[in-house]
Length: 462
Image (cartoon, helix red, strand yellow):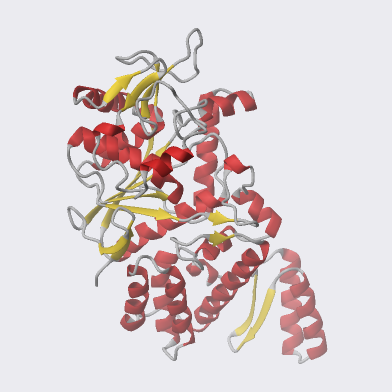
């Protein structure tokens, strides 16, 4: 079965063929760890998680690399402003190293709560400074760099096809760059490969280099790390759509200038999370919600946000609202209850090949999760044997990552709830139906669902 992905580079769906099948190399732009990730960021990581799971579902062996940007990301995309880590450290009264470690762990906790699989390899910008310097030296030797008072820059005029990823007119880019000016830059699209530490000041994160003491630019780290850890397996590079015009465009320019070879074959990007007023959620806008805040505000399971992300195709903006999250929570609970009902009746047996193929067809059509969810519901409503439906939905959950097998597990009840359950069981045995109903209402008032089945009473947390 063909696997189709939309390639930002060509602006069309293409059949995916890895460079060295069955192995696939995937690089995901990771977080800049100066603050918590917001749920818009996390939606992008859910997309890349589904991408990886779908390739594994198709039998590929995925090597997934994700970077941690713990130095070099300035407050302005055009290499203006100060390092976000240094700024965050000063704001919180901690060292830049402490800030980076704290928010790295916070990010890892968030993705764990969302059942996002860990990458094969985590890599930090600060651990690969030598590799980044070596890449800059290669560019220097090939004549792509020049030096200014504040750093070493890449001359974009010397790289043909600079806008082949963004497909943008340079004049349009120039208009957007007017708010950030560096008079020493030869071209407004030129970007920093290495920034010098300010005269007479010592940064918390700085290193010696052939050009002077300083730190790497933001873009160089991803090129250096992806080529170091993926080698010739440059199959898919993914991230948020906000990276297209600057970050990923610059990655391509510096990487292909250095090697003379295509950088990645596929570039895939997840769309923004939109809030009221049509604005994207962003730290720079001050309108972002963390996962913890979203959970506490809405009283939802973290996986309800994952489930909510499945309702919208990854290339379309996802609208955030409390109503939408409540609907996702209800939808997830309903799905779990359906699976729990099946598990009460039978054990998982064999997977139905027909529904498995329909599910895979949806996934393989550019990760169409809304359609894949529709296939799941068609399965659960079908006339297939209960054991087959259960085995098939468990198989589908290898991609969805909703822990549906745990939904079927028996739940340990608190002592007070257990006492009421025992009392209700006795009442039903003695046909005291009014008392049985009263006890059922008490149990449900404590936040539990009560189901009476031929096999007996089932009580669980929704």
